[in-house]
Length: 144
Image 1: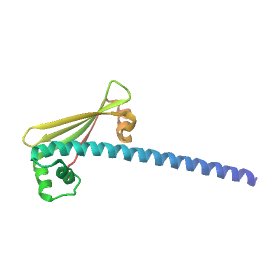
Image 2: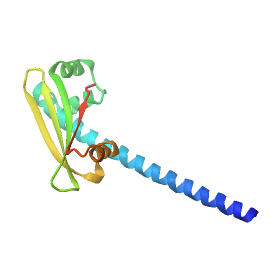
Image 3: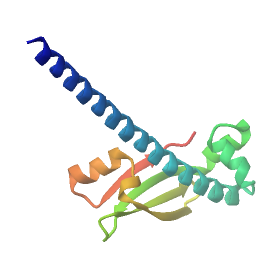
Image 4: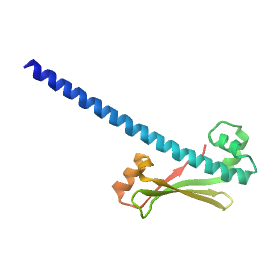
C-alpha cells in the first residue's frame, strides 16, 4: 500500500517538474522574442528620429531607452504623433511581416518592415492570430 502511494507521489513530482520546465522555456522564449522585436523597433525608431532631429542615432537610441538628457526626449515627444507595430501573416504559414509605422505631428510619416519566423513571435501575438483568425494584429507603441 505504501509503495503505491510513493509511486504516485514520484509520478506527480515528475509531472510537476516537467510542467515547470515547459513553462520556464515558453516564458524564456516569449521574453527573448519580445526583446528581439523591441531591439529592432528601437533601432529603426532611432535611425528615423535621428535623421529628422539631426542627431546621432546613438543619442536618440539612448533617449528612447530613457538613458539620456531630457531635452532630446522632449524633442522626440514634440515631434512624434504615434507609432504602431503591425504584424501581418504572409502567404507562407511560417512567415510574418512586422511593420513599424511612425507618424509625425507635421503630417509626415516613416514606415519600415521586416519578416520574422512565426516561432520567433511573442506568444500573445501568435495567440491573437489563432483566436481571431485575422491576418493582421496591431499594437501601438507608446513613447517614453
